[in-house]
Length: 319
Image 1 (cartoon, rainbow, N blue to C red):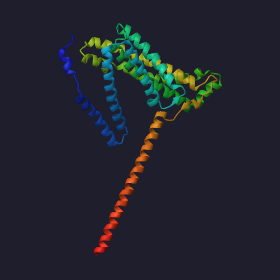
Image 2: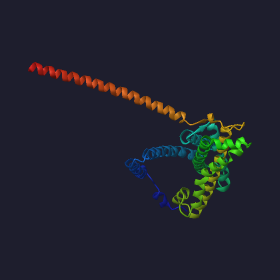
Image 3: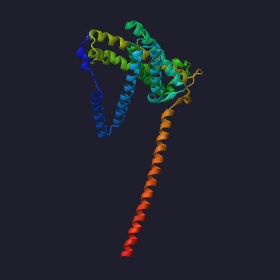
Image 4: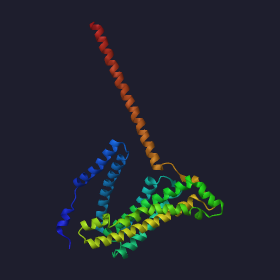
């Protein structure tokens, strides 16, 4: 039975969040003093974290109250869509043709089956779509798959562009496109899954993971919290592996065509269209502000010249 006093101990306000945010500000200040160039990224990411989690808390509160299967399904789809947009627009350094539907398919094809099967059978939740059980699981899986897919895509595209000659040697000797690209795919998946493998290997010995900590703070027994963490960690690793393998195959299928040719024109190395448009808007605003500032300076300068001329005329009349 949960201890009633545990709820009071874990009751947090915006003041507590503000105090924790001071840590980020302190690190950003050190970065600025040492000219490390990471302070802005830290503050921006922390600000996004506050806004996104606050909005998510409002949405989840409504969904948890209704516990409607359609609302749960809609939010799960929205999480996958937002994860896909984050991967394609913000995280990927290079993009290939049809990347958005490929990432979306890899994301949905890994997070939804793993979350349904894991919640229903591994976590013994019936029905599996209970909002306060299923939605957090889907959210954790989406967050994990983003990291894996980004690493895999960036590595594959980088190798196909920078080390194109190695792949073409295999193709010239009669290898199929997948045989020629197998070393690249193997290294990409190894890099994508390294964080999960390392995390699983140190859980319980070096670190106490977040899910287990949250369950303990919520009043669960240590044994139940540890078992829950095992289940969640295995689900995260499985979804990350599935999504990384799927997006690696999709990337190779698009960039290396059926004629066994590397199609570099299908790879876009420019910033995403959204960032290009944002840059144009920012540049336009800067130009307009500069025009306005020059106009104000000219008007101020003319006014100053008129005042100075009037003063000189007065001095001559008085002299």
